[in-house]
Each structure stands twice: as structure tokens, then as C-alpha cells.
Length: 96
Image (cartoon, rainbow, N blue to C red; front, side, top):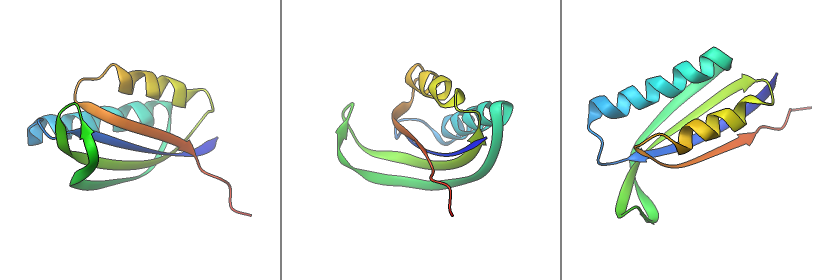
């Protein structure tokens, strides 16, 4: 199992229920394929530049452990999900 960190920026056009539903969807997907370590909802923040004519987004940071093949599937699901503006998945270095 490898440790990963993912950041997603959700559309500000989503209402509160839709935002919570998307977060729960990705939490369930990660838990089904690995171990969810932490979830930090940073809330609404101003974007550095406009994405899809939006200047604000809802930021969520998740840390998890999974097999190396899963992040590609997670990225694929991010890309086909409406309401997700940007995502990033990185492998965390092991501490020595």
C-alpha cells in the first residue's frame, strides 16, 4: 500500500447538498479501494485564475493509502464527474 494525497476543487455553482454528495461519493470510492486516512474541507476559496468562468471553488484535501493502480481510476472518475473543476493526485514520500 502506498500513501497518496488528492486535492479537488469543486464548482462553486453546486449547492451545499450537491457538494456534500460529491465529497461522499469520492470518500466511498477511496474507501472501497483502499484506506481513507483523513479528509480536510478547506471550503470556498478564490482561484488564482478563472476555471470554466468561475473565480471561486470549494477545496477538499484527502489523504489515503491504496494499491498503485487505483489513482489512475480515481483520476478517470474525477474527469467524468460534473462539478469537479480541478484535481491533483500525488504519491507521498515515505518518512525515513
